[in-house]
Image (cartoon, rainbow, N blue to C red; front, side):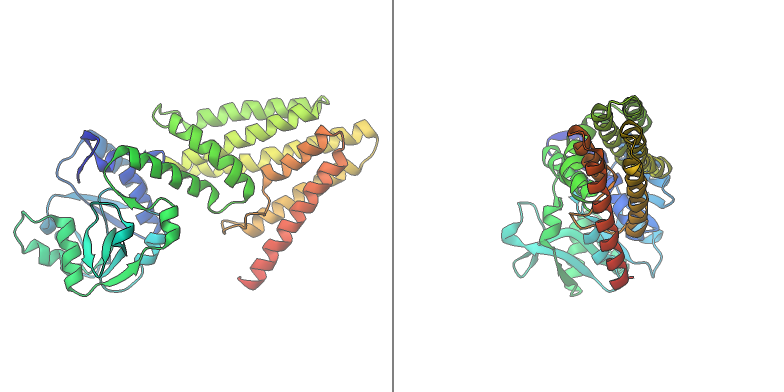
Length: 385
């Protein structure tokens, strides 16, 4: 591991990235790719690195630290698949999964003229883009060599000599924050890109254009201060309850706006919990972020029905909630098209109707939107079960 270029006293691996340290983010990607063991090659152990290793271990994966290739070879099973990440690498889960499949030696590469300085050349006008799939024998070969060799560079060279397959880095990965470097400033910029991709990559337009920009602005301020996700959720909950109260006492415009803001706060808290590897808290916060808009719509439909002596708004509100719930169940965790709706997006339409004193219009439009999203989701399930 190298020291950061602009922070000599800190390892690149322990620089903040996307709300956690870089090595924790890398471990997160490896675990998502199916890794059961993580071996970290270190020159020295710092308090920040020890803390990060402890947090990684809590995710149910074996974590070993080694100082030489020989020690690394001893830790690995002879039939293991080895995925090596460059020190200072940031990438996407999709990029890593493509290299984690079965097969022999493979190197992720990109054209030399598209790469910044410092990338490892591998011939044919290509440079190593920071991910390699290796046969465990490469570590054994390196262990037999003098110890003054750079482990990372030598393993890449040994894989090249073994005619490793070159896998071209997709342009989508570059746009998603892929890069290799040791500068804290550049890493922070890539972290913002990756954070936005985490939030908006599988979601609709509301998350992409509202929640993601807000998270990019707010989460980097919360993480250094160690603000717990529960504190953010508590604040968002207070705003949401105040919004529901205002709806119930016939101030729907202000109340619905506050519930939208409360939902945003709960979504941010869920993202913060996800970054900090708190899966139970993240699941509950996601449920609350979906439940608050449902309660707001039902409260508003009930209040509007009583005020107008007309049951249509309440029926529309119940229909909207049912359609939205069915849509979420149909979508699950699958990627979403940009136009598909979500709970806060539906609530925003309801709020627009309240602003012009047309509750049936707002609730009706939201219900139609939820029905269209459900129909599209069912059609996709039919084609791709």
